[in-house]
Length: 332
Image (cartoon, rainbow, N blue to C red; front, side):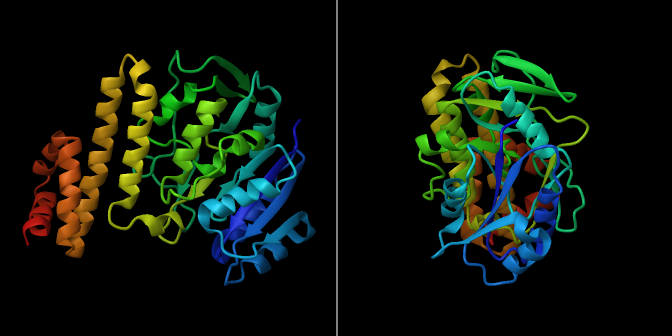
């Protein structure tokens, strides 16, 4: 069984980090290091970590603020294991998660960039969020995209060859960072997380890593082994300003389709589904802007939605309240 480093990048996370750390230190059946890399928090984050983990945690404080991508890269750089789980300060590990990940790694058939699986969404109070509201990252089991499958502890494990998992990343990002254990050598080879991205920094990395090496995906059993917290105080929520997050998602999709799409027989359908998903996102942003009285943003988001998939406006016509809000937002 391989040793794993669980690296928690922290910044002003006192509210939830204690729950996250406790869920890590209670993992059994696998040898692991707990590393906490703090990006110069201004609250009691590290006091909470010390109170929960004691001497189980190796704590490093950055000499200057590195930001989200920089701190994730620092976590991997400081890890003393080849396999690293960059686990977010708001999230929770279910019992048995690390042992399951280690078991998958032990049975890998070839060079692998990361091991991952779906993650349950929870809100700020810990209640489950419907996967129709927040994507849990459920990957459909389809033949032809993965090269090998096996059973481990009652769960199906799919192994994709280099480039194979990119097909799963063409329309959306099903990968939640806290549900990933990544290979440090592959991380270094592809240049790590790119700070030029704000919202889609993880999606961009999964694509580059999946091109370079294989990916192992653990299909959810009765319940995912990781829960990620979805709330307005998370760092990624800060980037949901204007349409930056949606624009970055569009860039990732367009990059994947340009690089790999020509080799897919169903590339046209993949593109249509991806564009429709993005159009719905822009339409939702237009609605939010209309409610906030931001006419310029509303018009810009509506324009992007129309350009990508005019068909989504049929959904607006079927919802008179949404139509009224958008008309008010766009026309004043």
